[in-house]
Amino acid sequence: MYIGKPIPNVSGPFAGRTIRSQLEEWQKPDLGRKFAKRDRRPVDPPPVIRLRMFEVLDEGTENQREEELPAESIETIGLVAHVDLFAAKPPPRTSFGSLEGAMQISPNSEYNSYNRGIGGQQDQIDESLLVVDENEVLTSAAFGSTFAHAVTIRDLKGESVVYFVFPDISVKIEGHFVLRYRCCNLRSRVAGSDDVPIMAELRSGVFEIYSTKEFPGLRASTDLTKHLSLCGIRVNLRENSRGRRNRRTDEDGDEDENSSGGGEIVDEEHGIQFYDPGYLDQQTQVVFGPPQPHRGAGSYDYAS
View 1 (tube, rainbow, N blue to C red):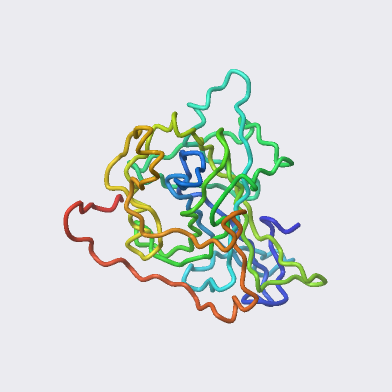
View 2 (cartoon, one colour):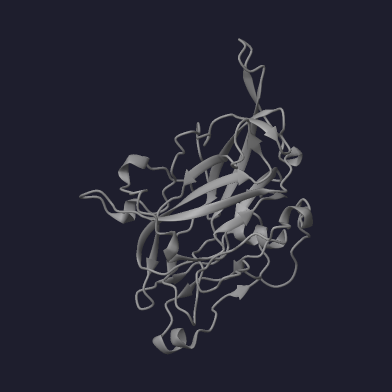
C-alpha cells in the first residue's frame, strides 16, 4: 500500500513524478444528534481536512529531497476524499472529557494540526490513548455525503490551500466515534496496476453522538465554517449558540440553523453517493477566489 508514502505516478496529472501526500485535520466534529428520519442533523462543526503534496526530487541519489507543491499548482479534478466511521472507546480510568477536541497524528506525517476556529485553541493527545477497532467499520451507520471533492481556496490567513469539506455527515447511532479520512486521485495509476492508489489517510479527533433527549445543542459556527460559506462552500451556519430544544419542537423537525445547503445524495435510503461514469469529463477545476467583504447585521472579523 502507498498510503502516506511516495507514489511513482505513471498516469494522471503527476505522470512521471513521485508525489507524497499528507492530510491534516483543520476542523474536527465535536458532536451531533442521532439521525432521525424527520430531523437529520449533520455533525458539527463540519469536518475539514487539508491536503498537502510533496514532490520527491533526485530520487535514489544522495541529493534526494522533497519540495512542497504550491496549492495553486495542484489540479483538483479527480481529487476526492472519503470517510469511514469507527467507534472510539476510552481506556480504563480515562474520561472522554479529556479526549474531546483531541487531534490525532498520522503515522505517516511529521505533524498534524487543525484550527477549531474558537480562539485558535489547539489540543493534542497521544493516539495510543484511544481504543479504536479498525476491523469494525461502522460506515453503514453514517448517512449523507461521505465523499468530498477537493477545493482550492484562501484560508483565514490568506494562504492558498486545498481542502476537503464534509458538511453533510450524520450518524444513526449514539456513542463516541472517530472518522478515518482517505484521499485519492481518480486519474492516477502506478506501474503494473489499474487500481487507484490511496494517497494518504488520517484519523479524526473524537466526537459524540447524542440521543434527541440528551443532545446539549450546538455552538455558534466557527470562524472557519463562516469563512468557507463566504467562499461559496455549502455549509450550515449559526450566528449564535442553540441550546437543547423541547421535545415537541424536536419532533416537528424544524431546522434550528440557517443552511447554505448540504451534500447531494443519490441513494437516500442507504446514504450512498455515486459517481457518474462521465464525471471526469463533466467536471472542471474547482477554485474559489477570495470572499467578498461581509456586510450587514451579524458581521464578524476573521480570526488571525
